[in-house]
Amino acid sequence: RVYSSGLSHGAFMSLRLALEAPDRIAGVGAVAGLLSADFLDTVMSEKVKIVFVEGTADPIVPIAGMNYNGFQYAYSLKDSVKWFLEQYGMEDAQPEETALPDTDPDDGTTITRSVYSDTEGTPWIFQY
View 1 (tube, rainbow, N blue to C red):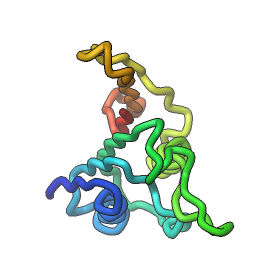
View 2 (cartoon, rainbow, N blue to C red):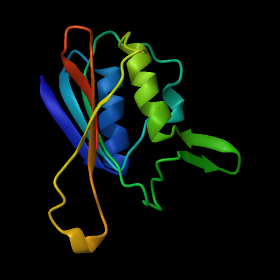
View 3 (cartoon, helix red, strand yellow):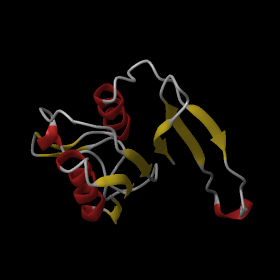
View 4 (cartoon, helix red, strand yellow):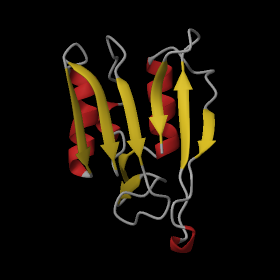
């Protein structure tokens, strides 16, 4: 089993690998990528660890999702996380949120880490 990560379209592809080959993929790091709306009817056969790294002001892959001329291309970050939580039977999971240290107070950015764990305490979905 391997890990897959990608930026933008590479992130979309990494998430697709998690959906289509969960027996081969141990985890996915999606940077500026969301769950494609093409996978609405997919049913995952096993859990894959997922890390979403998203910017709140990203104009290319906005966390609010992606729509083109009325066609939904990608879920929002919130709905992408919710979809995976439902697939994993963790729909009631609440994130443990941690503000990471602000290493450059002058750049105007901060990072919050949200971790969703199952009832045994195993973390499965990470959001930055």
